[in-house]
Length: 542
Image (tube, rainbow, N blue to C red):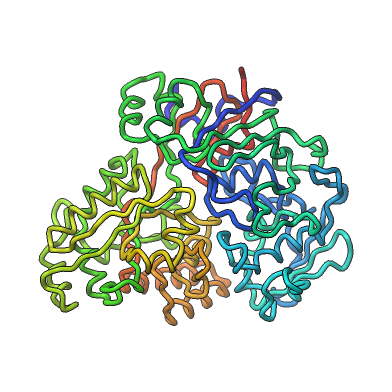
């Protein structure tokens, strides 16, 4: 019996079809609309329901993108400003209607309607040469940066060269949407699926039930094995209760992938049989505290630095699950799997990593707040809440009184911490969060967190600090256009150094998450691009 048997390899490989994969989550998905989803586990569910232009391969060892609805990678021309994709003929929606290039174009055009459809990634708003386009609604028409010369050709016009464009075409928002069935803000209640599974029933906050689509063609899909006949996700199960029922065999896996909580962790580590069914991958996620510059007194860099220096990093890491199973101490931003990772430590925490309280008090004095101040920490239930309360305890040692505000998990990034209006209304000076790369490059990891052009006022914002720094923007643009990998990595290190100097992201841990899988699943592996089980690839051996 082997620990981590589904990391870097397939555990219990099988091609047997049939059965129902039973999964569970503590909260609902953020959205079933492919234009509005950003939770990583929602993206993995989307892989079962929707096909995209490109897609991450079902590969346990390498995070690579391959053609999905496209017949090949993008064809690049015009000095990197034009990308052309050829679309597979004969692929159909769950309704039996054939998918054409215009359906994919329309799905992508919906991303521009941010006032109505916030929540998903918005890279394309900055990258495409769209001339101020704001979506297909209310007379918006077609995006001038996207054209369809024929039914099976899709062409994109970029503002500047961007070598990672194929990665962007693997995101859920490149799923096709039939224009005549678009219900705008209500589309997520029942999207038209193009993958091997369709939505049989969706009860928000309660349950999602997927069944096979009769029109999916295995021969046209190079990504999805589609082994199970049905999939269910039970939502809203309290985290410790979720672990108990998972270990009892009621569910096959935790679709949400939040990781086993402390009680379940101790049980697994003490039991050889349970331990052999567990995986503890390095996920590529960064666990961190965000400091909001728009919430006083954090408009002062000295107030922000006081938090960095007063934080008890040893206690925060223990709250996450401890060194090893919970992750490894992070003192810089980029995870170890990216070339720009350095492990530098801009804010040393003193002996035992418990904080440099004298240095923190000096920063408070420099901010004109020698006696400290009050603020609020935004968080969500489970480990995040434990981290928030641990942080509040450590900050109190220097006179920073931090109340903890527990927000709803399902809407945390759309309407809670990810909404600048909510942050201001609740006075969320600090927030407990994590982040993994949208795709495994330095740009995919850091740009959404620190590029001011990606601040989203309507919600679904991940630049929580609302950092809009001209030095950071210029360095990002220089890095994305650099052809030499070594030079590009050096530029990204300069981005990281600048952000750390501004003191808006306090790194806590490079994440490891303890996952548990039922002995009844087949074809199980942790996907290297997502750090979670690739649900769509699993089968059931019951």
